Length: 138
Image (cartoon, one colour):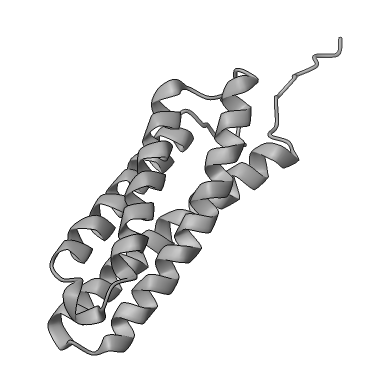
């Protein structure tokens, strides 16, 4: 008697989406930490680091958002996750715009915006991976 267990393993699209989503989270965290270092030292290079990290986080968040929209269209993703990821993108976008200003003029709002982007990215990542069990199966 043969027992066949059918496990729905994630394919290439889902893995690419997960990698982009999981990569955006540390970028936003590092940008916030760089803003914190800039607030304490006023060395302008920390502001530059935060700007570049925000751009990297935005690139990955954009890829994850596009994948999430396609996944929602195919019925794979929940609406709450998609809204959290869209809010992350908006917060990251405004943080990146704010970091484009003069380095002396970005504080204290820069820390608030990068913290918001990080917390929303954390929420979106948690919502995306909360339903997974061992082996990537929902």
